[in-house]
Amino acid sequence: MLFEVVTVDPPPQIKLRCQRTPAARDPSPKIADQGGNYLKECGRQGLLRLYELVLEDGTAISPYAWRTRLALERLRLPFVAAGVGFTEIKTIGEGQFATVPVLQDGDLFIADSWAIVKHLDGRYGGGNLLGSTRDQNMIRFFDSWCRHRLLAPLTRICVLDIFARLRPADQAYFRQSREARLGATLEEAVADRAERVVDFRRELEPLRAGLSEEPFLGGAEPTYADFIGVAALIWAGSVSTIQLLEPDDAVLAWFRRCLAFVGGMAPKLTPRSSLAVIS
Ligand SMILES: N[C@@H](CCC(=O)N[C@@H](CS)C(=O)NCC(=O)O)C(=O)O
Image (cartoon, rainbow, N blue to C red):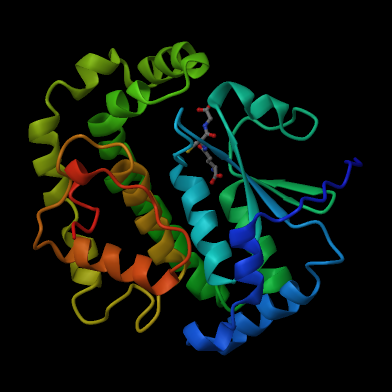
């Protein structure tokens, strides 16, 4: 299937990224070099375009898109973020997608965050972000753990906060689809969230154990597994009106370490979530 190649004039901050010297900040030259090769091709190819969900104020609001953003940033790949509302996903490409993220690389459209990161790492990262098959199996295992221990409980905690900040055009769809999924109204789902957030924190013990000896799940540097977990916290932390983590939680320290390591775009975290660095 052929698609029109979209060539986008990069906005100023993306031009800046093109000019940044990878070696100055990135302790992983292999990955940075791959990104550098891509950057040299900036002028010849259309930039990568990431379709992601956004709230009414433009805040990016998908845990799956955030892990892709972190991978793009880690690989030093400039990209254009194309924000869509829930009800606009069907306008991407030829209308064949039901979820985001969707990555457009030239005339290629790729859906599903795992397929996307495999493509990015294979084409631009030299396979160094995802590592061996054994590494990838562990990443997939952690992804599954995150779905149960981060995404599911955080949905029940934050679903009404998300709803309140959606584009009006998305609200009816979101309410209907999420209430069907949760088996409760959005208001009922969050009614006991003060207790749920305590359970949520307690259930993070395996993650704390995994971080007890090294700064990242990947050891000295974050891997894509770190990004999967951090992306879930960014997603919830972008909307939450309830404190998610205690200030002395090792998970919070890890979250902030990962963001500092990756650099680049700063997520807009709510002060109430406790994830934002309050200066
Ligand atoms: N397995 C997919 C899951 C993506 C997904 O569930 N995306 C959500 C946003 S976080 C979505 O697009 N939902 C659309 C909807 O609910 O209509 C991936 O890894 O990309």
